[in-house]
Amino acid sequence: MQTYKLAVIPGDGIGREVTPVALKILKKATNSVAEFVEEHFELGAEHWAATGGTFEHPESGEVLTDETLEAIRKNDAILLGAVGDPSVPSGVLERGLLLKLRFGLDHYINLRPSKIYPNVDSPLSDKILGRGPVDFIVVREGTEGLYCGAGGSVRTGSENEVATEVSINTAYGVERTVRYAFELANTRERKKLTLVHKHNVLVNAGHLWRRTVEKVAPEFPDVSTDYLHVDATTIFLVTDPQRFDVIVTDNLFGDILTDEAGAISGGIGLAASGNIDASRRNPSMFEPVHGSAPDIAGQNLADPRAAILSAAMLAEHLGLNDAGAKIREAIDADILEFGTAKGRSTTQIGDSILSRI
Ligand code: NAI
Ligand code: MG
Image 1 (cartoon, helix red, strand yellow):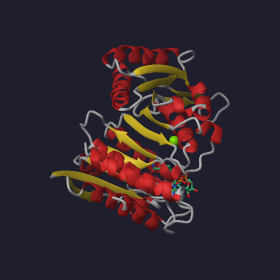
Image 2 (cartoon, protein in one colour):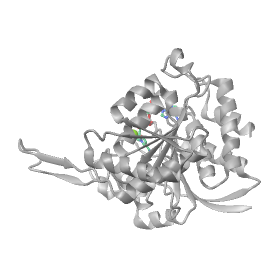
Image 3 (cartoon, helix red, strand yellow):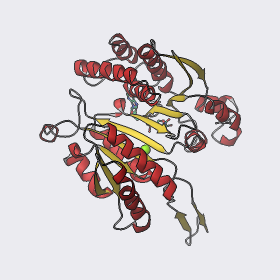
Image 4 (spheres, helix red, strand yellow):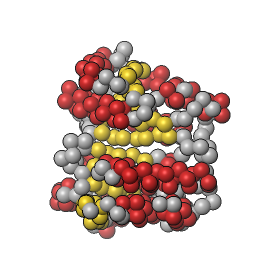
């Protein structure tokens, strides 16, 4: 029996409803092979307000202290619900909590699977869906690109304002991402890797990414590679999504493409993600893509399946592949029977999946 230390951050809103459900299912699926020692961290809007945060003085509240970050770092993995509330100014929790965790724990891979399940409504037409299964995964670089805060503004607010956002791409950062994507593609049935960029215009970063893929490719002779510009990719995601297996791309393009991927695959209730330090020096964090959904929070209405799929990814990341597969099979069976979540409560969906494990 292997023991793992698990940091749990339920967060706010529906995060507090879906996380316990995911946890219960993770434990049942792993009960014969692993034990999770949980440490719960009360972080998010409520914690910020309780420690003095107000809309006028957001800095008075505590978001994520360095001590808490160090306590989280001591774990083997992190399960996060969602954070956010209208009472908190935009950016406070995103930067202070989510980005601080992502950068502090070097989560350089943002992993987002996309699968269109049978019996789930997708906005794509039957004609397109009839061409076969849609099952791909986006490997988005998570710590560089346009999102690392390089830039600034001068003469701010004047007619002569100058604002810059600089995209940072290091050979080190690109290579570790590309390598991860090749390794992942190599484990999948179709073994196909598509690099998405815009190297006809973004010639500096784009060609670094292209050359890196070309450099690593010979180490993975079974993986076929392909390249698409990001604008063309947005078209193919809706006209020919079956062509994709593993997509590797930078931080900004990955952010945009994964929203589109979520939209075609039938909803936010099924979109899971991993924030991964593949070097395994820091714990990786798994979370549903959705937010805290204040509009439905506290009503037992949230679809817990995105959180449950995130727990399956967490299990697989720890090498508990059989448990991950058990969770996925239970979700597949539930979706096949009930389709989208309409009319079912968080508890009902959770119990249905739990009973199938
Ligand atoms: P949201 O994802 O919370 O909600 C968008 C819409 O989808 C809402 O109508 C909501 O009811 C619905 N929805 C979301 N998850 C659902 C689920 N599991 N089952 C059924 N319906 C679901 O995004 P929104 O409204 O933009 O953001 C709300 C708060 O969450 C904000 O404070 C935002 O900053 C935060 N947020 C946090 C994230 C995180 O913790 N990683 C990610 C996205 C948003
Ligand atoms: Mg986004």
